[in-house]
Length: 110
Image (cartoon, rainbow, N blue to C red; front, top):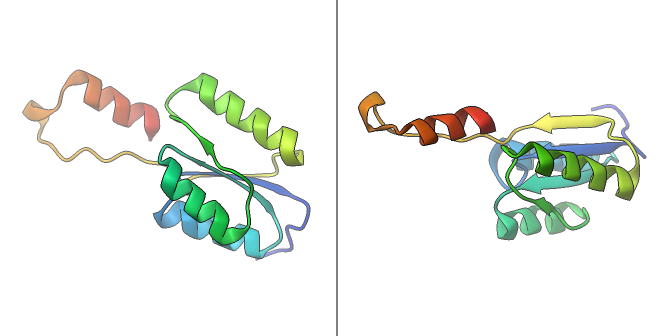
């Protein structure tokens, strides 16, 4: 991992899984990591674990929220220099059991 001291990294889906792993690596490389996730308690736990500031919590399928998350990261640390889009939605249903809205939500998030 290159030295990312002073760089700003935004990580979506950073409350768990691959997003949290990326957040840990970026913080270890010196980046200011901004945790973005829908799950506030888990996002706060990840932020605390890596020494990041408070997470930015909301729904990334909403473009206005995404713009505000980037603005908040920029206000805090400048940048952004790194963006990790690790957020994702999974829908476990067959084609007949999937509503149009559920399908559209998966597409908006992913």
